[in-house]
Amino acid sequence: MEAVTLQAEVRETRGKGPARQLRMRGLIPAVFYGPGAEPVTLQLDPAPLRAAITGEYGRNQVLELAFGDQKSLAVVKDIAVHPVSRDVLHVDFYAAAKDRPLRAEVPFLTTGRALGVQKGGAMHKRFRSLPIKACPQDVPSKIVLDVAKLDLGANVTVADLKVPEGVEIALPPTRRVLMIDAKERAKKDDKAEGEAEKA
Image (tube, rainbow, N blue to C red; front, side, top):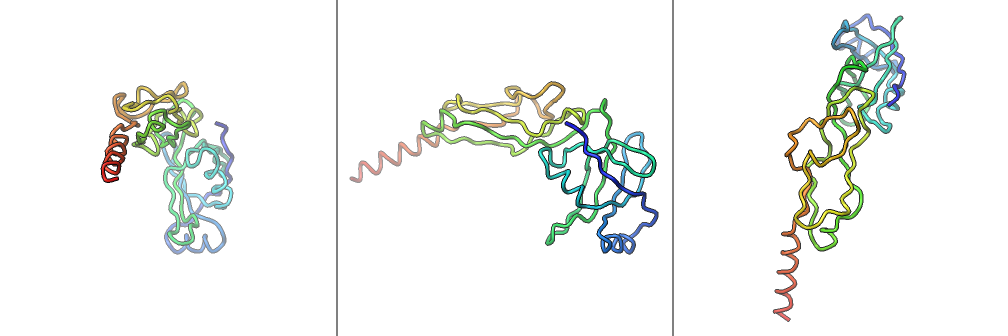
């Protein structure tokens, strides 16, 4: 993943009043902190930020935060959004380093149509996203599982998932993430038999 440069300015004022005035000028308040970094209050244009975190990597996008006379790698740690307008109100940037793993949530997707589903079973995916641990540049945009060959009764655990080198799923290896339930087919068969008997 390539870092996206984001320009910011050091903010001298703090508090609700100055933050409100800042938003009236089309800017948002922010803070930068983390290991090896002095906390700094910032202000920035929300448009480039929104563009950066709505791309392929979402909020996991690595940022090169430029402010004052320095540039620092960072990721979005927390973001406050207005409940109605969805405008960004405040953002926390967390200091990152290429050699220091961080935790992130990555979308968990499937591809293909499971063999067991074709036979009448049901697929149950237990996670929409998976917690991972990786250095910032190694964080994947998503984890994809091909389910085409999965038959009735199949179970997929964390240990069965293929992830890029340098990426670790932060769950026990035996944790089940997906299953093809044969009970759904049994229910359908029972229903069909019952309807046949009534006929």
